[in-house]
Length: 115
Image (tube, rainbow, N blue to C red):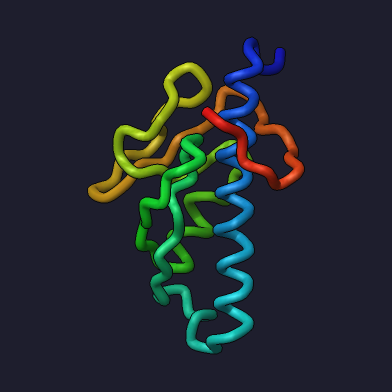
């Protein structure tokens, strides 16, 4: 099926870039801090929304981050950052929400798009 509009694709690409950043952050923290390998260790991840200027943080344990973002179509967002035309909320937590894309997110070149 694919994304209907170019703007939907650009927003989905931005979310993928933020997710890749968070995954790389987790890898770097694990390499530097041995205690970060514990499932209960907390890290301030960035919001994985589509807004290229968003710098909101979401504090999660390593275990929680891995569990919530295990699926390639799932992303962690601050409340009210979801885009209803490309994703739906699948889990609502006190400090953030988990959304799932309607389509499999695209691969990216690592450059954020203007939204």
